[in-house]
Image 1 (cartoon, rainbow over the protein chains, first blue to last red):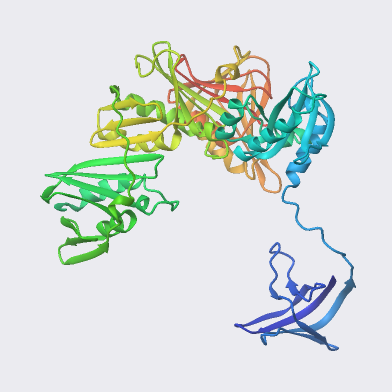
Image 2: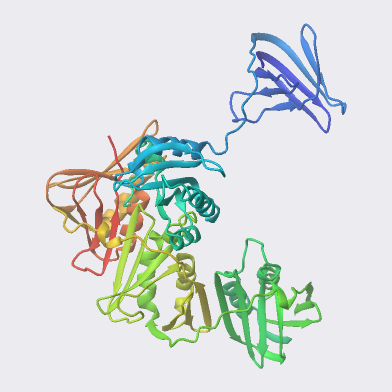
Length: 219
Length: 363
């Protein structure tokens, strides 16, 4: 990733023509060839940009960026304040289930947030059909399998039902009861869980993280 | 189908039925209003499957029939016409709308794409419209608009001490109103009605002195004037609201409602970017304070009587305002325990209404 902060003028000629008058801006050249010109505002959106693939040619006082379609970005550099390059390596990508994994981690530290008397046996307890999120013991020493979701829907109850089926075949664990835990549990999921003698519990992510909301809730 | 009627009658009817028309897509029929003409009686029905509104109006009928007409387009056309008589005629798959020198022809929606409507057969209970309207105005605003917690988007109707109790909460505040002398439900029975349906009901309650309520297993219907509203009930367990209401409050502030309302509206101007309004209460009365960083602050004294320990408690100004607005009385009370426990807005010397509100935690 190359980051150049410079007084520059930018002219784009392609699907339309656009001109950015002289000002100080950030020019970002990504490893894949994308070039983006940013002002000091406007969140993620550049003032002008060229998606990869591009050919970037550097001259003393200007750069030209040309795409295979013939679009051209002309960046005239009046004064360069900073020019640095950084190797960011390979990005691991967006973790869409980050909240779910974090919920599992937080609840594994303190299972009593789900039910009083619960103690952790193991996180990601393996079964033949995949790991159950948490395996715990309740206050009476019985085994409890816990499935954690951000949004508790029928699919999650079905998943926990399958785990329970396998776990209850293990004489060392049986009888195993199930607890379905989510930030919010849909009525259909709650009904299905009740029908299968699976307990349900809604938990507050902010409370688990120790974040205090200024606006308090009644419940 | 062919009929003639006054433009304003049709605007009103299409507007009312159209409020239930789905804006979310889905079945093509749901973007239409079903028009059913028998003699001089025209019924217009709009529905999104959760809420159905049927309006009956008298027209000059020429030819009976049924047609599903595009709700938004037909309404826009009729509104744009010159005042006076309008003739609507549906034939094959086209609807003709004509008035004066204007002539429109629009494509109808296939009739079989409009859902079958539920008819509730249970005996109706009659309620005075004005009484229900007052209660709904006090309770419905406290319901949640967040669909992720569907139970909180409903208003609980419960039988209570020989009357009807309405309760709504969005978890930050709770509004409760008792309407004595109305036996809609059996003792112990409760139903959860979507607040959206009750908002629409409130719009039409002015069309008749009495509203007839029917309850089914999964639906409730309300009939007032020539309008029928059928709504699906919300399934699930409403929070145990009784346990949320503190049994006693050591501090009680009594103020003129209008004085507090006016002062709060002024001070609220400086409670921006989610900052709360602080209520500083002492034997000298009440002072409202709002401060927004980098913007400014506001302060106003309100005359009142305060019994209890000096206390400063902060609230979301909008929630507080909405509670005071619906506590329609010359004097209201604000009862508090401390700066973190729920406070209670009540109409002075009247137990039928309460508004419970959680304070905002401030440093």
